[in-house]
Length: 304
Image 1 (cartoon, rainbow, N blue to C red):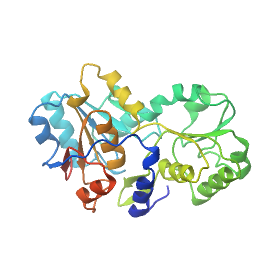
Image 2 (spheres, rainbow, N blue to C red):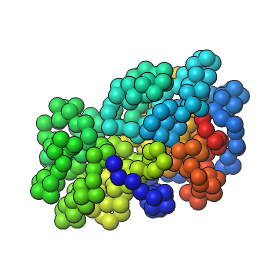
Image 3 (cartoon, one colour):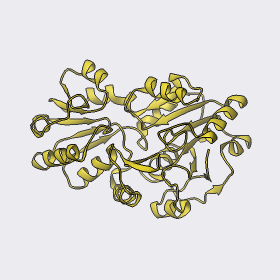
Image 4 (cartoon, rainbow, N blue to C red):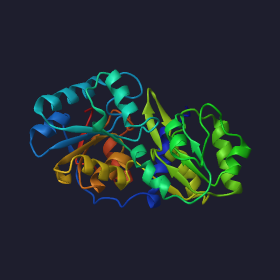
């Protein structure tokens, strides 16, 4: 896993504005004690949780996240997890969260990986390299995809030989892998499908550099034409709407830790958003950063 300073990741997010969905209009956030304060006011028929930075930061569950889950179950308020954690499919995400103590079913997990079949069927013809820790299901589904994951790190000739890239995750990368991909695309720009648009993610006491970190950097240099799946892009929120067709968007509440994914995506999809300060923005002036980004949530809370 590769890491990045906060400011480096933040600058990439700011620069990525032209490749992002349309920004919602400005508003004045309200500071609240936590999720259940908002829910108990009424008007919330579904709560959507981000995973990293809200429910955990790569280790044990956050006690406040467990308490929020328990409180929603006791109140009978439906919930789901909408995550850019796409290393495994929704079943694998569910298993990981249950192992941390969360009570959640696979059908309550939505991620950009669920959008892959339709996107890959519509991609330009040719052989595509799959950058993924776990690519078994992709290799079985798409015969023209070449695994470039943990079992066999790609060489320069491997990267040069394919016509495009399916970028699922970079958990197994070294700096060498990143440099080889950069060099290959510098020689021959090619399209890329990115399942995880996150630029960075809180992981323990550090910030990991995620696929969006590299995809946006490469796209800014004109080296790739990127199709992003997952938050903040609309497709993943449409999946939520399909799972919960009886719930109007304005009665959905997104709980996240990133202005450029959770606030932009949730508000852009017509939902209200509560931004927590524990994850990506931990140690930052949350309101100042949101104003700098031009992305303001409905609510700000220290934790869920």
